[in-house]
Structure formats: structure tokens, C-alpha cells
Amino acid sequence: MVDMKAKPFYLDDEACKWVEDTIAGMTIEEKIGQLFFNMGSSRDEEYLKMTVNDYHIGGIRYNPGPGKEIHEQNRILQENSKIPLIIACNTENGGNGAFVDGTYIGAQTKIGATGDAKYAYELGRIANKEAAAVGCNLSFAPVSDILYNWENPVIGLRTYGNDADQVAEMAKAYMDGAHTNPGFSCAAKHFPGDGLDFRDQHVANSINDMSCEDWDQTFGKVYQTLIDNGLEAIMAGHIMQPAYTRYFNPEIRDEDIQPATLSPELIEGLLRKKLGFNGMVLTDASHMVGMTCRMKRSEILPHSIAAGVDMFLFFNEMDEDYASMMEGYKNGIITEERLSDALHRILALKAHMGLHKKAKTEIVPPVEEMQKVVGCEEYQAVAREISDKGITLVKYLDEDVLPMVPNKYKRIMIVPVSGLSAGGFGEMMKAMMGGGKKSPAERLCEKLCAKGFDAFIYESPIAKLQREAKESGKPVNINAYFAGKTPISEFVGNQDLIITLVDIPGGFQPVARPGFGMTKGGGEIPWYVHELPVLVIATQHPFVLADIPQARTFINTYDSQDQTFDVLVEKLMEGPDSFEGIDPIDAFCGMWDTRL
Image 1 (tube, rainbow, N blue to C red):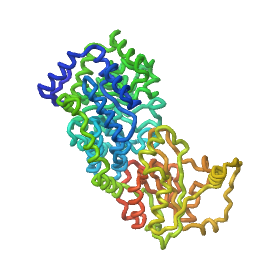
Image 2 (image 1 turned 45 degrees about the horizontal axis):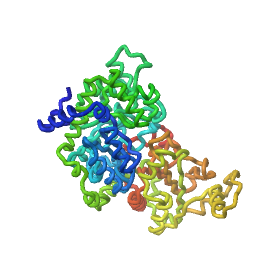
Image 3 (image 1 turned 45 degrees about the vertical axis):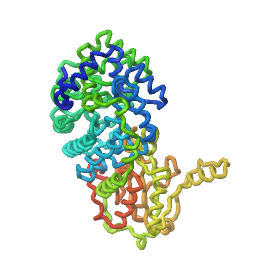
Image 4 (image 1 turned 90 degrees about the vertical axis):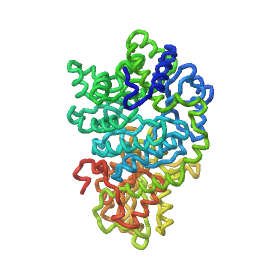
């Protein structure tokens, strides 16, 4: 039995009665529907009503959109749902994870670079105040992973660092900040812990291969800290943890070891029994190959609930998935006891949020509340302060390069470098982390020119031919090889300093690597680090030194927001002592040559 009066629900007798009465009054169709977290693909009113009336969903995570659209969507959902909904958002970096015009505050790694947990608290407070204003009540955050492998393709900037104590402290601070918003809850992810494997569970298996003892001192410490301090929900990842699986099931065969989303050993054994977690557990998105490669989809749905997970993300085809879950109940894969357990946790979380006390028309705040808080000056000031404290001068070998001032370096060439692959989630991240329609290189160039520099953007020969062909409308042969045999004296005479601006995503896709010469005709590789002062600046992917070890000055800004570039330019002009950020993830990638 779920103890609804205990941590993290803390329900009183009235709330417990609401849970029990609600479950008692539900049909089996409604009970099965509560297990589903829908991925809202439309904001059409009829679609929204259909999802709650026909499928009785327990929660929803929706496609991004403007705040007013999200607010109206959430109002329609709550006013038409028989049982109040959990409405989730990905506020990892700010309110922009709840709606596109929300305030970007800072990536978790940028927060980690400040070394100050108060900024993680502010991130949790601000991001989820904006989210609550449009009707959200659960954040799929904090990301509680520890980045031990720089080639991990999922975490990128979604970590507070590679030190378990700092990750635990800052993840808790984020949660504490989120909890300042009445009724708002957090779902930490991705249990049992990402950041070790070089593979991506979106497209392959993923394994946390630590020993039980090492896990206890790292990921276990993070989750235990959060659980002890009132974490309401945990998102299980499609990540295997063989050591603890074997600990709780010594007879298990290797081929039967499952990711956490399908593993009773990890959910009921490690999470519930060892860590004492009494809250709600949900799966990560069910379309990821780390889950779909384990068994048929029709089997995945009920087996995830049978393993101890309470809510399933997301529908594939609604009728088919709903029928599979129902069939799993009817044939005994989901027992009555397990279904009751899941429903009690789902409804207890809703009561913990205070949803049972509100009229349907009062669950989503008035739209005026959103207009008061979104993008206010206070939030912008916090974001700028985080940039001031977080931008990191990682490597600085030529001690006379900075400060960078016009009378020392008048003419500056900016060399933009993109990734070999920036599709899918990568493009989404670039949109979220960037500052607008203009490219980072264009915006940095404008800011430098405004400070009195003669800055310009490098254009490769092939890129120039492509541009001219597009402007003229005439085809042009670009299958040419440019050897780059410009005299060094001429090259050095054309500029005083070079900024290599690397703007590639740092997560949500197979590891992106700088696309030197692959898409723009060459010339981007900073071979000239001994010819001219060169600043290599990474705006997202923090491990650029692995591909540009020759960089002698390397800076991580962690994003390309306008306010971040404003602070960056100030620091470049003030000198090296103005950089306060502390590298939280070993940007040298554990390689000896990156420090040379």
C-alpha cells in the first residue's frame, strides 16, 4: 500500500479520502487511461477534448508553442477532464521549456560553472513560476545526471557537472526553487543515471556500468538527496544498470537484463526498497530505441507498469496502445495490486499539487498572471548575472592576448564553425539556446563593431560560390578544391585577431563534431594559432578542445544568448581576471594534448 500521508505526498485525511473516492468511482477504462502521459500533438479543441474524454489520460506533455496558446490549451484540458491533469514541461534551462516565449535563464552546466547553488535555486524558481502561469504543474527536471564521459551524446549541457556532491547540491537547489511555486512538483531524470555511455538511448542501448558501491557514492547520492528532501516524481530512463540488477536478482541472465523502464529490480528493488522512494515513477519517451529494442510494443506497455512504473510516456497510436495496456491488465501482466498502487501514486501526486481543491475553471491561472511574470526585468537580470559568473576561460596559454581592445586588435575575423550533424533535436536545442534569427557569428560581429572593432565574418571560397549562385539564380560548379595557398604574410596582414566561434549542439543527438571543411569548403580549421592571436569560443558543445587541441585560448559561454554575448565582449575587453566561471565538466576531455 502507498503511504499517502508520508513523504513526498504529505496528504491529510481529506486529500486521502479524495484519492480513495476517486479511484472507487472510476471505471476500468478510466483507470487504464490514468496510466498514460499523452504527448499533445495538436491544440485543436476537439482533439484536446477527445484525449481526456475518450482516453481518460492522466497527464500530458505537449509540443512547444507561444505562451497564450499553451495557456489556452491547458485551460481547455483542465476544464474538460473528469480528473485534473498533470501537465508537464521541460523547464531544464528556463521558462522557455514551458512555452517558446518564456525566459531562458541558463543551461545546467552554465549554472554549474558559477559554483553557486543559489543560481540553480533561481533557475528552478523562475522557470517554474513562468510554467505555472500557463497551467503547468510538473517539471521534467532537474536533470540529475553526472557527466563522466565527454562523448555521451544525451547530456551535453544538461548537467551540473562531473562532481556528485555539486550535482546533488544544485539539483536539490533547483527543486527547492521550483517548490516555491505553490502546488508545483518535480520529476528528476534519468534514473538510474546517464552520463557514462557514449551511446544514446534514443537510438541504441544505454548502460550505467558502475559497480553498486560506485553507484551509491555518485548517482545514488544524488537521488537519495532529492528523495530525502521531498522529490515527488522520478523519470526512469531506458538505461540498464547491470550491477544492481544482478544484486536484486542474482539468477538473472544477461539477455534478460532490462533498462530501468522495464526492470522490477531497478524500480521496486533499487528505487523503492533501497532508496525508499514513495513518489510517482514515469517512463522516459517510449519511442526511444533503448526501450523499443527490448520487446514488442504491445508487450512494452503493460510490462513497464508491471515493473513498477506508474505512468507511461507517450502514446504511439492511441487506440492500439490503449488496447495493449488494457489487454495487459486483462491477462494479468498488470495485477490488481500493481494497478491500484500506480493509481494511488498518480492521484496522490495530483492531491499533493492541490488540484482536488480547485474548481476546474480555477486550476489554470488567469492569463493576466502569465503576462505579469514572463520575461520580466528581474528574470533577465538573473540570466545576465549567471552569464557574468558562469562564462569560463578554460584554457589560456598566451597571457598577453587579453584584454582585447580596439587599439590593440582593430580588425577581427570571426570564423563560424557548425557541426557535421545538427538535425532533429539538435536544431531544437539551437533554437532554444540561441538568441534569434541572426546567426551567433552575425550577432557577435555586430556587438564587436559597436565597441569600436572592425569585425567581419569569414566566408570560405565554396560558401562564397554558393551564395553568389543563389543570388544570381545561375548554377555554378562548386566541386572545386581550394588549397589555401595564400601567403602567410598576406593572411596575417588582413586581420589582427581571429575568433573561431563554434556553435554546435551539446546534447540530444549523436555526438556532433565540428564540421571543418565538410560543408563550407574548408578554411575553418584554426591552423594559424602561432601566426595570430586566436580565441576559440564554444557557445554550446563544451568539449570543443577534443577537436581543436591546438587552441591556446578557449572559452565556454554555454549558450549564444544576446545577454551572454554582451557579457562575453565585456570580459574580453576587461581581461582574463574578469572570467569567474569554473569548468564543471573537464572541458579538456581527460586528454593530455588538449592542455598543451
